[in-house]
Image (cartoon, rainbow, N blue to C red; front, side, top):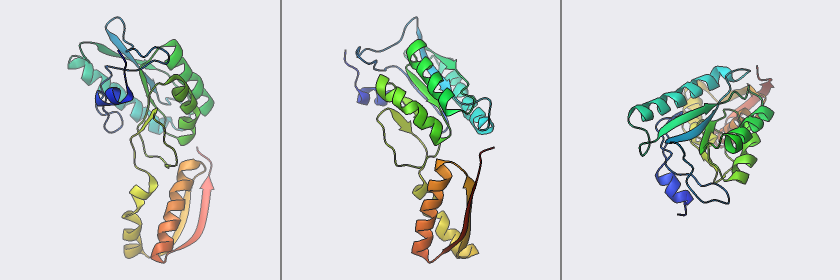
Length: 213
């Protein structure tokens, strides 16, 4: 039986950080078969529990486990229990890559939920594309990337700012000082802000980035 991306996505859903999810099918490279054994379906949970971004990723980790518990309490998926395989990538992109490789190859997870920063998402992307696995990225991101192996569930900068920036200009004025942490997302967010301000006759009086942590 051939499992297509469409048939997989039709049977899989996510809302919010983890929301609700179903994992009845996944395609394995060079096999084209559903991977489920012993009445369980393994999914990876790859959020930082230590390090700089743990303060944010811990809540995403907890929401994912809560969704899995709710699905299992309701009978699982097609009578099979979802089993979470948890790894701590410690807020480090290289460790994200190492742990993602383990979850896909050694643990044989049908799908993985994880990442908060774009750097960590980009670190694991080659693994999921090469192995034809599916990665759920449950947060906002900067755009400029599209992969059939990643489910981007959050808003991109123009979706967040197209109403907000005009409201700020109207209510607080046209001069802006842009700040952010020194990584991909804040810089792309501020780039969109500058485009909108230019259209509205606004002015950027300064721009500054500080190290994460």
